[in-house]
Length: 250
Image (cartoon, rainbow, N blue to C red; front, side):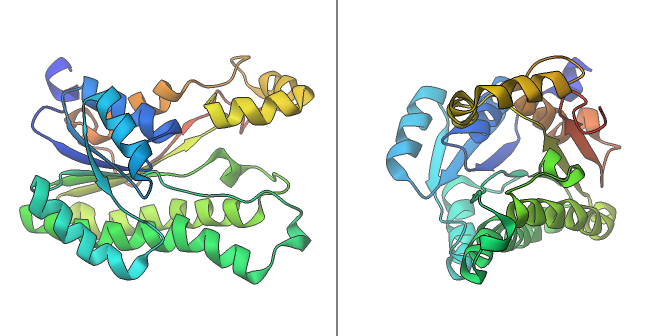
Protein backbone atom coordinates (compact mmCIF):
# COMPACT_ATOMS: atom_id res chain seq x y z
CA UNK A 1 0.00 0.00 0.00
CA UNK A 2 2.81 2.42 0.86
CA UNK A 3 4.23 1.99 -2.64
CA UNK A 4 0.85 2.28 -4.37
CA UNK A 5 -0.25 5.42 -2.52
CA UNK A 6 2.90 7.25 -3.62
CA UNK A 7 2.48 9.85 -6.35
CA UNK A 8 6.19 10.00 -7.20
CA UNK A 9 6.74 10.71 -10.86
CA UNK A 10 3.18 11.91 -11.43
CA UNK A 11 2.59 15.47 -12.66
CA UNK A 12 -0.78 16.76 -11.45
CA UNK A 13 -2.65 19.99 -12.16
CA UNK A 14 -4.98 21.42 -9.50
CA UNK A 15 -7.28 24.20 -10.67
CA UNK A 16 -8.25 26.80 -8.10
CA UNK A 17 -5.14 25.67 -6.25
CA UNK A 18 -4.11 28.99 -4.72
CA UNK A 19 -6.71 29.05 -1.94
CA UNK A 20 -9.16 26.96 0.05
CA UNK A 21 -9.73 23.33 -0.90
CA UNK A 22 -7.42 23.59 -3.90
CA UNK A 23 -4.55 24.72 -1.70
CA UNK A 24 -5.14 21.84 0.72
CA UNK A 25 -5.38 19.33 -2.13
CA UNK A 26 -2.11 20.60 -3.61
CA UNK A 27 -0.39 20.26 -0.22
CA UNK A 28 -1.46 16.62 0.21
CA UNK A 29 -0.50 15.69 -3.35
CA UNK A 30 2.92 17.29 -2.80
CA UNK A 31 3.36 15.33 0.44
CA UNK A 32 2.66 12.13 -1.51
CA UNK A 33 5.50 12.98 -3.89
CA UNK A 34 3.60 14.41 -6.87
CA UNK A 35 4.94 17.17 -9.05
CA UNK A 36 2.11 19.64 -8.44
CA UNK A 37 1.06 22.58 -10.59
CA UNK A 38 -1.56 24.94 -9.18
CA UNK A 39 -3.63 27.03 -11.58
CA UNK A 40 -5.78 30.11 -11.11
CA UNK A 41 -6.42 33.43 -12.82
CA UNK A 42 -5.06 35.44 -9.85
CA UNK A 43 -1.29 35.64 -10.27
CA UNK A 44 -0.45 37.21 -6.92
CA UNK A 45 -2.31 34.51 -5.01
CA UNK A 46 -0.66 31.86 -7.17
CA UNK A 47 2.82 33.21 -6.46
CA UNK A 48 2.14 33.32 -2.74
CA UNK A 49 0.71 29.80 -2.60
CA UNK A 50 3.47 28.47 -4.84
CA UNK A 51 6.15 29.84 -2.51
CA UNK A 52 4.41 28.46 0.58
CA UNK A 53 3.77 25.03 -0.88
CA UNK A 54 6.93 24.63 -2.93
CA UNK A 55 4.98 23.78 -6.08
CA UNK A 56 4.76 25.24 -9.59
CA UNK A 57 2.07 27.62 -10.77
CA UNK A 58 0.32 28.45 -14.03
CA UNK A 59 -2.09 31.27 -14.77
CA UNK A 60 -5.37 29.95 -16.14
CA UNK A 61 -8.77 31.57 -16.44
CA UNK A 62 -11.12 28.59 -16.40
CA UNK A 63 -14.02 30.79 -17.52
CA UNK A 64 -12.20 31.70 -20.76
CA UNK A 65 -13.39 28.73 -22.76
CA UNK A 66 -11.82 29.96 -26.00
CA UNK A 67 -8.40 30.29 -24.39
CA UNK A 68 -8.32 26.96 -22.58
CA UNK A 69 -7.10 24.92 -25.57
CA UNK A 70 -4.18 27.27 -26.02
CA UNK A 71 -3.47 27.29 -22.29
CA UNK A 72 -3.50 23.48 -22.09
CA UNK A 73 -0.92 23.26 -24.88
CA UNK A 74 1.25 25.90 -23.19
CA UNK A 75 0.97 24.06 -19.90
CA UNK A 76 2.29 20.77 -21.28
CA UNK A 77 4.92 22.53 -23.34
CA UNK A 78 6.22 24.25 -20.20
CA UNK A 79 5.97 21.43 -17.65
CA UNK A 80 5.60 18.23 -19.65
CA UNK A 81 2.79 15.65 -19.93
CA UNK A 82 0.05 15.93 -17.32
CA UNK A 83 -0.83 12.64 -15.61
CA UNK A 84 -3.52 13.89 -13.23
CA UNK A 85 -6.11 16.66 -13.17
CA UNK A 86 -8.13 17.91 -10.21
CA UNK A 87 -11.03 20.07 -11.40
CA UNK A 88 -11.51 22.16 -8.28
CA UNK A 89 -12.15 25.70 -9.60
CA UNK A 90 -15.64 26.96 -8.98
CA UNK A 91 -17.75 29.96 -8.12
CA UNK A 92 -21.13 30.42 -6.48
CA UNK A 93 -23.64 33.16 -5.90
CA UNK A 94 -26.02 32.67 -2.98
CA UNK A 95 -29.44 34.20 -3.39
CA UNK A 96 -33.09 33.25 -3.61
CA UNK A 97 -33.81 30.83 -6.44
CA UNK A 98 -36.37 33.12 -8.07
CA UNK A 99 -33.99 36.09 -8.02
CA UNK A 100 -31.24 34.70 -10.28
CA UNK A 101 -30.90 36.30 -13.69
CA UNK A 102 -30.06 34.18 -16.74
CA UNK A 103 -26.70 35.95 -16.92
CA UNK A 104 -25.85 34.96 -13.33
CA UNK A 105 -26.77 31.35 -13.98
CA UNK A 106 -24.73 31.22 -17.19
CA UNK A 107 -21.69 32.71 -15.44
CA UNK A 108 -21.69 29.95 -12.84
CA UNK A 109 -22.13 27.24 -15.48
CA UNK A 110 -19.39 28.80 -17.65
CA UNK A 111 -16.82 28.33 -14.89
CA UNK A 112 -18.01 25.30 -12.97
CA UNK A 113 -19.09 23.13 -15.92
CA UNK A 114 -18.04 24.37 -19.33
CA UNK A 115 -14.58 25.51 -18.26
CA UNK A 116 -13.89 22.30 -16.36
CA UNK A 117 -15.12 20.13 -19.22
CA UNK A 118 -13.11 22.00 -21.83
CA UNK A 119 -9.89 21.74 -19.81
CA UNK A 120 -10.57 18.06 -19.16
CA UNK A 121 -11.12 17.42 -22.86
CA UNK A 122 -7.85 19.05 -23.83
CA UNK A 123 -5.69 17.36 -21.20
CA UNK A 124 -7.43 13.99 -21.55
CA UNK A 125 -6.37 13.80 -25.19
CA UNK A 126 -2.76 13.41 -24.10
CA UNK A 127 -3.67 11.01 -21.32
CA UNK A 128 -5.48 8.76 -23.80
CA UNK A 129 -2.55 8.85 -26.21
CA UNK A 130 -0.21 7.77 -23.39
CA UNK A 131 -2.70 5.22 -22.10
CA UNK A 132 -2.58 6.47 -18.52
CA UNK A 133 -4.09 9.21 -16.39
CA UNK A 134 -6.48 10.07 -13.60
CA UNK A 135 -9.08 12.84 -13.39
CA UNK A 136 -10.91 13.99 -10.27
CA UNK A 137 -13.86 16.38 -10.22
CA UNK A 138 -14.71 18.21 -6.99
CA UNK A 139 -18.49 18.23 -6.76
CA UNK A 140 -20.49 18.93 -3.59
CA UNK A 141 -22.68 17.38 -0.92
CA UNK A 142 -25.37 19.81 -2.11
CA UNK A 143 -25.95 17.39 -5.00
CA UNK A 144 -27.65 15.12 -2.46
CA UNK A 145 -29.47 17.77 -0.46
CA UNK A 146 -32.28 20.24 -1.06
CA UNK A 147 -30.19 23.21 -0.04
CA UNK A 148 -31.69 26.68 -0.41
CA UNK A 149 -30.07 29.70 -2.08
CA UNK A 150 -27.70 27.57 -4.17
CA UNK A 151 -29.79 26.71 -7.23
CA UNK A 152 -27.27 27.18 -10.10
CA UNK A 153 -24.29 26.10 -7.99
CA UNK A 154 -26.01 22.84 -7.07
CA UNK A 155 -27.00 22.40 -10.71
CA UNK A 156 -23.39 22.72 -11.86
CA UNK A 157 -22.14 20.22 -9.29
CA UNK A 158 -24.86 17.74 -10.21
CA UNK A 159 -23.90 18.12 -13.86
CA UNK A 160 -20.24 17.36 -13.08
CA UNK A 161 -21.25 14.38 -10.96
CA UNK A 162 -23.23 12.85 -13.82
CA UNK A 163 -20.70 13.74 -16.51
CA UNK A 164 -17.94 12.15 -14.46
CA UNK A 165 -19.60 8.75 -14.85
CA UNK A 166 -20.23 9.25 -18.57
CA UNK A 167 -16.65 10.35 -19.15
CA UNK A 168 -15.36 7.39 -17.18
CA UNK A 169 -17.30 5.00 -19.42
CA UNK A 170 -15.41 6.34 -22.45
CA UNK A 171 -11.96 6.97 -21.03
CA UNK A 172 -11.47 4.12 -18.56
CA UNK A 173 -11.07 1.44 -21.28
CA UNK A 174 -8.32 3.66 -22.68
CA UNK A 175 -6.36 3.84 -19.43
CA UNK A 176 -7.76 7.03 -17.87
CA UNK A 177 -9.75 6.77 -14.63
CA UNK A 178 -12.36 9.43 -13.80
CA UNK A 179 -13.80 9.94 -10.32
CA UNK A 180 -15.28 12.69 -8.19
CA UNK A 181 -15.29 13.85 -4.57
CA UNK A 182 -18.36 15.37 -2.94
CA UNK A 183 -17.21 17.45 0.04
CA UNK A 184 -19.60 18.34 2.83
CA UNK A 185 -19.09 21.39 5.01
CA UNK A 186 -15.32 21.84 5.07
CA UNK A 187 -13.74 24.39 7.38
CA UNK A 188 -12.03 26.64 4.85
CA UNK A 189 -11.42 30.31 5.61
CA UNK A 190 -14.39 31.20 3.42
CA UNK A 191 -16.75 28.88 5.31
CA UNK A 192 -15.44 30.07 8.67
CA UNK A 193 -16.28 33.64 7.74
CA UNK A 194 -19.72 32.64 6.50
CA UNK A 195 -20.60 30.62 9.61
CA UNK A 196 -19.24 33.29 11.93
CA UNK A 197 -21.92 35.62 10.59
CA UNK A 198 -24.64 33.08 11.41
CA UNK A 199 -23.48 31.09 14.50
CA UNK A 200 -26.67 29.03 14.68
CA UNK A 201 -25.94 27.65 11.21
CA UNK A 202 -22.62 26.23 12.33
CA UNK A 203 -24.35 24.47 15.23
CA UNK A 204 -26.92 23.06 12.82
CA UNK A 205 -24.24 21.73 10.48
CA UNK A 206 -22.28 20.16 13.32
CA UNK A 207 -25.40 18.46 14.67
CA UNK A 208 -26.19 17.03 11.25
CA UNK A 209 -22.71 15.53 10.90
CA UNK A 210 -22.50 11.98 12.22
CA UNK A 211 -19.01 12.86 13.43
CA UNK A 212 -20.18 16.02 15.17
CA UNK A 213 -17.82 18.42 13.43
CA UNK A 214 -16.95 20.17 10.21
CA UNK A 215 -14.51 18.58 7.79
CA UNK A 216 -10.90 19.66 7.49
CA UNK A 217 -9.49 20.80 4.12
CA UNK A 218 -6.69 18.25 4.27
CA UNK A 219 -9.29 15.47 4.44
CA UNK A 220 -10.39 16.41 0.93
CA UNK A 221 -6.74 16.51 -0.11
CA UNK A 222 -6.10 13.00 1.19
CA UNK A 223 -9.17 11.70 -0.63
CA UNK A 224 -7.92 13.25 -3.86
CA UNK A 225 -4.44 11.80 -3.35
CA UNK A 226 -5.93 8.33 -2.91
CA UNK A 227 -8.09 8.55 -6.05
CA UNK A 228 -5.15 9.80 -8.11
CA UNK A 229 -2.81 7.09 -6.86
CA UNK A 230 -2.30 3.49 -7.96
CA UNK A 231 -3.96 2.42 -4.71
CA UNK A 232 -7.23 3.31 -6.47
CA UNK A 233 -6.29 1.53 -9.71
CA UNK A 234 -9.61 -0.38 -9.79
CA UNK A 235 -11.77 2.62 -8.94
CA UNK A 236 -13.40 4.65 -11.69
CA UNK A 237 -16.80 6.33 -12.22
CA UNK A 238 -17.10 6.63 -8.43
CA UNK A 239 -18.11 9.60 -6.30
CA UNK A 240 -16.53 9.62 -2.86
CA UNK A 241 -18.54 11.51 -0.27
CA UNK A 242 -16.30 13.22 2.26
CA UNK A 243 -19.04 14.77 4.35
CA UNK A 244 -19.06 13.20 7.82
CA UNK A 245 -22.31 11.47 6.92
CA UNK A 246 -24.27 14.72 6.63
CA UNK A 247 -26.02 13.73 3.40
CA UNK A 248 -27.62 10.65 4.93
CA UNK A 249 -28.32 11.84 8.48
CA UNK A 250 -31.59 13.20 9.84
